[in-house]
Length: 167
Image (cartoon, rainbow, N blue to C red; front, side, top):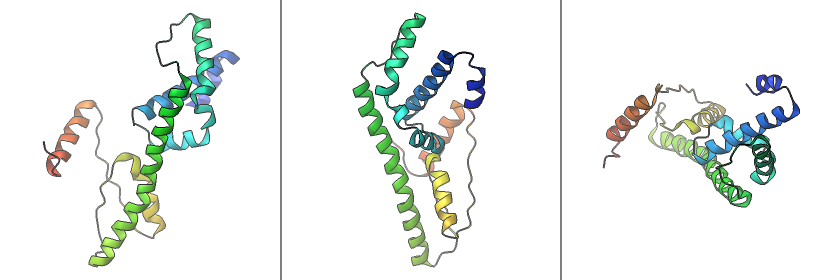
């Protein structure tokens, strides 16, 4: 998608705005704690360009040049700090993946089990799968389809009810 957007951008200014928009969307998803593993990887590959102190002045200049009122945050240092905390959250999540696999395999060994189910959220799925496969474990990933907000809400309510997270 990024390659297509880059080809459609006619001017250098349009290309720069497209790149800025991609960074803003990535950071927005981070602040919503909605990153996917691909988002985490994209950030790691371009961390410097994702630092608001690098792109916010450009974005504000483009907004002013185009006569668009900027209503978002304008303090790059505060955004940098918030992004740092968000990235740290995902780094801890990735570190937990290794520990979850270690503990699951240890529990299976202790009980003499050859089959187990490991239930985890979407961000962890790819990493857990890869870690288990690296250990020679056969893996099947089952992902419920939640195509819209109603499906997602219903799925969340079912999990909370089934697994004791009731209020």
